[in-house]
Image (cartoon, rainbow, N blue to C red; front, side, top):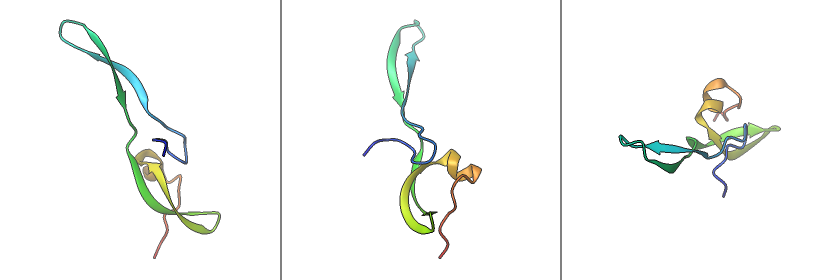
Amino acid sequence: MANRCEICGKGPMAGNLVSHSNRKTRKVSSPNLQRIKVVVDGVPRRIRVCTRCIRSGAIEKRTK
């Protein structure tokens, strides 16, 4: 299972950890993915969505 948002496609981001002595080591930060129930084409499904898509209203949450 890929660590990727199914709506916007946001995935792991790479960068550097920089110490006080200015040494650099690589780091990977993952997006904050939540597994929620949403309505996709009129059918309720459980998908992995980043919190930015949830907050912006890019998805329609399933109601009970």
